[in-house]
Image 1: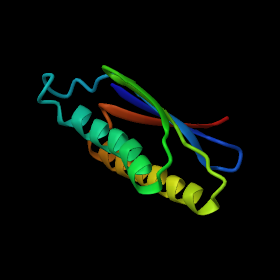
Image 2: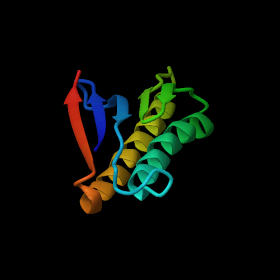
Image 3: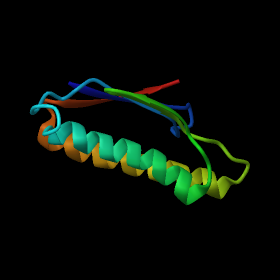
Image 4: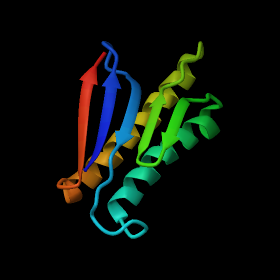
Amino acid sequence: MVTVTIVRGPDGRIRSFSVSGHARYADPGKDIVCAGVSAVTVGTVNAIEKLTGLVPEAKMQSGWLSASAPESEDAAKNGQVQLLLEGMVVALESIVETYGKYVRIKQGTK
């Protein structure tokens, strides 16, 4: 199972997220669930960097991704980062609606 963990600050803003595990929906290379989760999460990290100019601290290995939301003195850029991260959550929830047996999302406050 793929587990996505979303960590929010006391203010509700996403501070970081991590993805671990394998869906095992299909054979490696044909697993649309893993591919979908990877596309959404890696795409979000790339979008944050390209669209805001802020670079998330991210680490990735096989079956694992961890990223922290970058912070800026520019409130507008911070808002853009949060919008992209919240969009990621919505996209992941859409995957869970159909493939919940293979993906779960955990959210917590830190």
